[in-house]
Length: 226
Ligand SMILES: Cc1cc2nc3c(=O)[nH]c(=O)nc-3n(C[C@H](O)[C@H](O)[C@H](O)COP(=O)(O)O)c2cc1C
Image 1 (cartoon, rainbow, N blue to C red):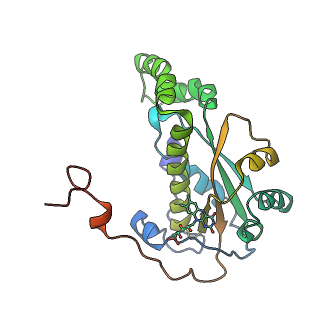
Image 2: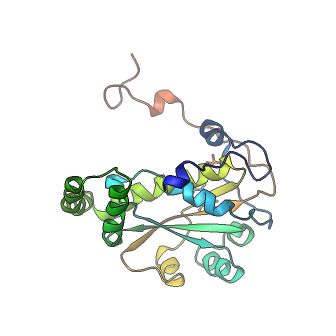
Image 3: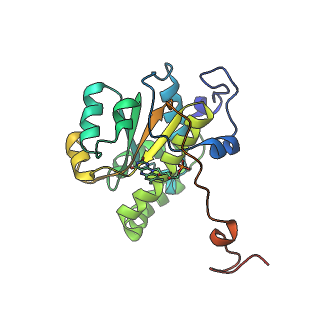
């Protein structure tokens, strides 16, 4: 992690400077069709590495990603995702999974790394060991993984966009069939899938967003800005 923090990419695959976060948010659109062009060597690892820098409660990092890039695997995913063409077309689609219980199996590894980096003390680690399970149960593991995996998936898309790679997030898949097709354990949720690559055409007209006054309240629900 330490090395990754000091080795962030500064250029897109085209050689252009990486877009700022604000630029990536403003430019990102959901693309429906992708060119078969592969992603440059190492770029997907870079994007996945940035996605794993997403925040998580107690740093439990319940996300797990499956990269689908081989033709046979793409066909398997396409079959269980309402045959959305982008899955066959894009050089990679990432299945974003959430560990409802498996986060506990990486708890000690996570704490040891925090300790090694000087971020955690033994006392704090003990607190996390006791508190994490009840927190996850309190929220409900399904809500809890959904919350976390969507943050990581968003970081994935924005990291990709900033490095010149376009995307499409999808909830159009049959979760049980995806799990069966990719050997995903019973207690793991498939939260979303994200195609990554280069769009064949400009995005459809921007459909706009609701005005800030509709979406943002101040000091209480439904209250307008003073
Ligand atoms: C959780 C989620 C699920 C989505 N599922 C699909 C999908 O299955 N197929 C698809 O083509 N687009 C999907 N989209 C893309 C939306 O249609 C798109 O974000 C929306 O129309 C706004 O367009 P924009 O992303 O280009 O701004 C999904 C987006 C999100 C955030």
